[in-house]
Image (tube, rainbow, N blue to C red; front, top):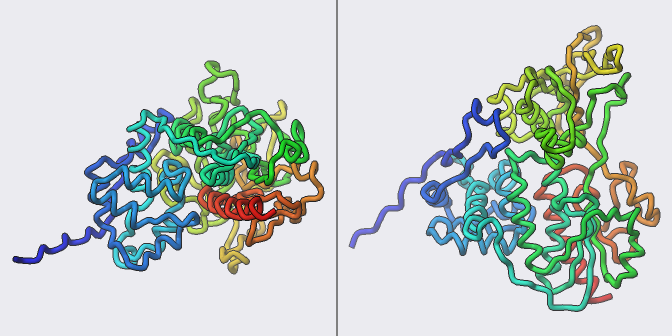
Length: 471
């Protein structure tokens, strides 16, 4: 009997099928089409099934990555999905927008010699396979067993993860969301061509079927207070309200017409469907020359949406560092380039120039040069004296970050906050300075990734269970 030789490991990932750039800039359909069954089998078989898998340590929610990939490699997609769902409440979301290249895939052992295993693409396939199997509405079993009630404020990734963990543990869970739609930043902050609303809603339907109660149009801190929630018999509260307060540059003429925060622009397009006006009631100003300020994923989303809107002939990203320092995912930068977005690096706005109608018509920019690394290891930009120039534009999107909305904290001054307005928590328990009130996600960390927010929600849920049982 001869030993069968293991097939030679393919050095490169299975490429992700995508819409061609010239086609996708005419629609808001998803750019990445996803693996089919044959592709996922080939890619999953690249996994080395390490005895000490470093990829797991790179995952903020601790998914058993080798396990779900092993099932995928064997064609047992249902077991693969079930393995994922034990650790991750939103696998179809994470498979699309999680920065695997900086987390699990960065730690992949295969990546030391070849390209790492496409962990995120396999995760997406398994989640999508399950959604299709259940016609985009997989049914879950109602998990509620206990009379003990807990509340979750906000409906973004940290909140959904916390709610899912708590209902699986048997508690009665109510989620309070300020907007009329569920999903938080996953709905209002990320365009359909990266993360379709239907996918988010299908994932939320699973959590709802488990027994989580969702209430929309409830602005905690205004229409409902934390004391009200406690008065309803809730034994613990999780705050996951995110970072929805936009930052601006504080330069002259920032009040001009045609200057948007990325938060407003993305919410108008993604949630309120301004791209389909007048079919939907929300308008967006007409423009030919769009300038997006910033270099993160939000800036890429804003620019790529702008390329899809009728009449936007020129879309430019202005960023004060070089492309190397851009915090956006590499694939998002590449997609933006493919779609015709122009990059103007090493520049910083000094002032907006307005016309007689108080509308932006140009910007004064100054060229920058990079110095020594700052506290985060990125080279600090410095202005080059006398290098100012005029850049014509009639629509500006400011995408330089955001912080927590102060409304909830102003209504609850007993909760300790930092000078940036984020909530101070015990790093071990995620409890705030108010007993029984926990917090996680961007409201604690500032703007970060979906998966890191989910990790915080999962950690807080474990501490909430301990608190409720031992209080």
